[in-house]
Length: 248
Length: 392
Image 1: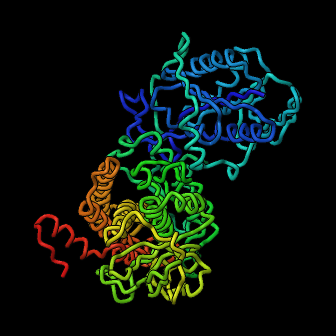
Image 2: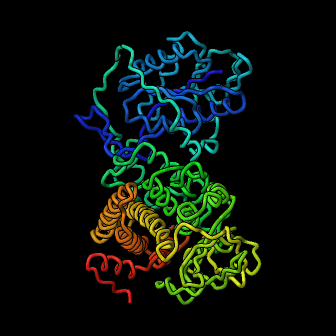
Image 3: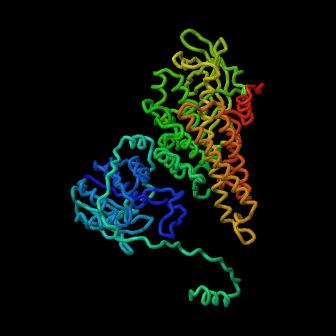
């Protein structure tokens, strides 16, 4: 089984978020980047397939040279080869188009992408890849087992889970549940040393239209000061909730 | 203890100077400390025990001999990687970093640099995986800053050496499998010997009741007519320069490690100051607290630059003993001052085990003393710039 794990290079969850150029661009100054958590759950599940079922695991990302530490980490965790598509990601279609092109040429049986990246939260990439390649697709996937070409996937749905029988070739949109946070791996020194020798292919981007453009980013409004109301003064509390907070 | 919310300060964007591999190594160590050290370290420090269960993890992140070549089980990393690993481990606890420093710089390094090929092959791979732990015996009860006056000695008995003497303040001694011991031969020349646990007449009593490095095991090495096989002598360097060469490597690691302790104290104090409300606003809004925090980040940033440049020099083999002394002295004093100021910001909370600050502060009292005291390092700089030794 040949698996492609699509990896997005996203700001660490503790990053301070700011925008530049008239609030149209994310300010990367001083920001640390990590493997998108939804992709990391998928990568860790792919490592399980590698170790238990002899799968080959490749990782791919769309980004400039600055994303290489992130994919090198995936190699240090255990992926066999990495592909960097040398282009700045613009929107979901552009990214999916690039990844689909790599996937088509690589002959993968299973493509794992995160359900969404935690920066722009588009949530479109795995679905568009599946459409472009005409492959089966399971989104919000919280469990995946493969036997031969048969796949059993569990999908998270509102208030519960749905178990689906499908087959390879398959694209999944992965998330927590594929593995748990405690299963995530820290690259060990042996892995880091081996990663030095593993192939990191840089391929040029395929022509693809950018369908959307960022017009403006806004941060949530800052929280106002807290007003403390005396416990006995219910009338004032109701008045504030009604007239000021307009909550009732 | 509170959950580990550490966010590393990088005010001058030093990460931009680090290579992809540096970042990978550093972040792996950082993640490991958060996952495996932070949740347990306070408990072990309180009960004065070394958490032996983390030895495997230390080996996994490359803390044992990261710059030793791959052929001997090391990782073949550069000196900046070694420094970054030490920084991250000491961010967790100086005692744990001490264990790693000793294993790497004081045990693996002399075997690699001064040992025979047979010694390298016998010891280094097992030390790199943590299967064997080592310690280093230089300091004696009567000889601290003046190691050249050591009394431990050995005699050539024809088919073996007979070792007698005692060493004190030895990190890892209570559980170490081997000890690299410095002793004088009959001509008074200092040589290194590898002494193995189980050799008759060799004992390692533990030093109790420390108020510092409580999560690290410290003890003595006592040699009473210990028969050491001749093949256990490190043949390729002798004289005081041999152990001092190991100390250069360990002190370099400490210069980075102390930054880790300071970063943790600063980060804790900054978070606390932003959350702690007094007189209707966070204490971070008061000038006196801002002065403390601003000075802390300034000093941490300067120390980071010092360590980074020293790492570059060490990578090309140009870092001098005096340059290493300057960085060890400056960075440890910086860290101890940051710990004390951070403790002030936390008020009473700062003295409890809920936060790491007081543990770091007490640990650093050892770090400022061992591997060359604060004063001795000053005199090394003094001698270097004036040409006059003022040690004695």
